[in-house]
Image (tube, rainbow, N blue to C red; front, side):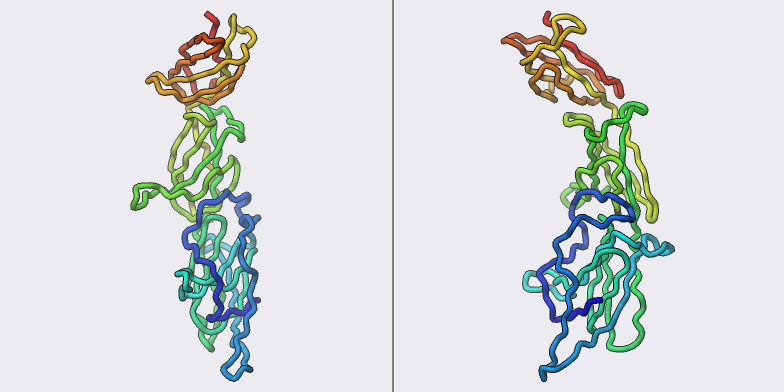
Length: 309
């Protein structure tokens, strides 16, 4: 239980829109990564005579994923803010708590309550009267969970270490850009989000295998999406004969059919992921250059051998 005062100021801002962050590990079990916030603050103001007591009133708060759902028991972060900005133009943070439902003690006055559940969050203004009944404050998050994964071709699973996802808002801002919500999401990670449509960018490897899609998250539900990449993993080899041993100290350049360089590397047998299409491989070794045209077929991993001829 925490006693708040409208006279208490802390230099923290109300984050109505969450900043990009790493994805959450569980939909309803684990809280967000540690946030550097002050603990629950106890404050008893003094009257003009120097001997007064606080008019504290207890209020219990709970958050629900949907209006008809049960209170969330884990993973919540509660923040209480003073409604008047400080000298820095930010709303001062008065108290915070983590876990499930929470109970705070307020002095009469106005406050902002913000509750976050992963990247989902909602804000509510609360007025505390001097007397009269105080009901439990229920904040409806209208939030759900999203799990992302991907395959190459029809059904070939992609190693988790070669996949990453970035989640953006579906709508464009005034600058014409979509706002990044969560970056560098790993496969099979549950991300908590407000209900709505999101723009997903899936990257397979580090070259040009990128797929974009829009996915809708529904409140109170866990959405599992599998994105289909049209790409394959290739191992490059410069060999004297077909099936021969790869020659070391080889510099590689991979060009698209349009002549654009998409990859450069050095090694006996570098491995890269390329989007489906036509390419030309150039292998340079001992001041000589060898080349070969090849085709990438989605989901069909293979070796690309360039002969010393």
